[in-house]
Length: 126
Image 1 (cartoon, rainbow, N blue to C red):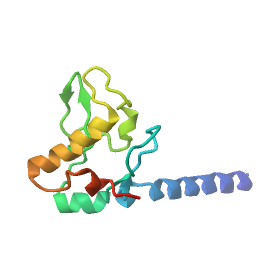
Image 2 (tube, helix red, strand yellow):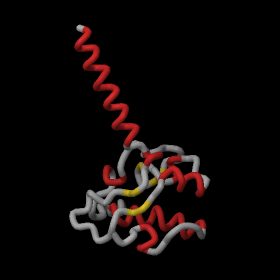
Image 3 (spheres, one colour):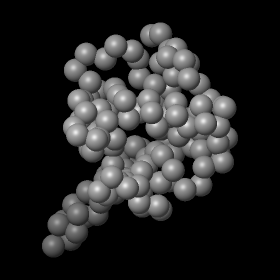
């Protein structure tokens, strides 16, 4: 019995380490592993530094949720990857993954007149 409890506690501890290691606060890049043949490098994105500099407190500002074409205020998809909802190609009114990244990020940068908008500013040459 003690062996089983120790095994369960070890598994929970290991899971906590994995989840913590992959938290968005530690994020430095937006992965491009879902694209079969990426044209550019991963986008540089220090999640925590970005949100502090942009004064973003509400996760739903970037991690949006839509229902019947309407954005749900204060509903957040922060526990999901963008690729969980967005396909590689557009589906109906839902933009492709690549377009969703660019419209969401660059659109905000253009609106605020701050932040990178040129390809190489986010996707440095390897």
